[in-house]
Image 1 (spheres, rainbow, N blue to C red):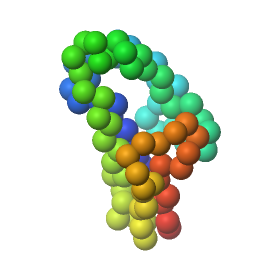
Image 2 (cartoon, one colour):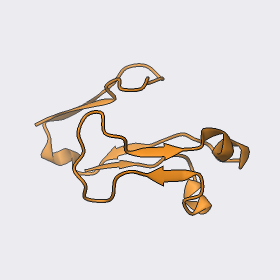
Image 3 (cartoon, one colour):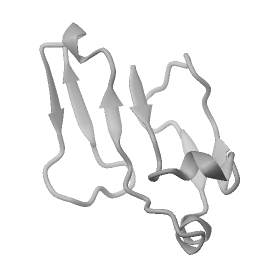
Image 4 (tube, rainbow, N blue to C red):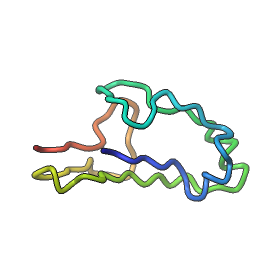
Length: 83
């Protein structure tokens, strides 16, 4: 169970500039497109695009490992969840 919240307070945009490609409860696989958003429009609207990623059921796993560094490129591993 992963929650990815793109931006701080961006919920106030009420979905403007965002296109979701998955829904709550969907199973996803490596490489699946989850979300598209207009980076420039969100920044120009005054929002911070810091994106918290939360594993809400982390107690179900032995470990959750994150990629080192501050920047992740497209298709690069972000998290590894160990059962």
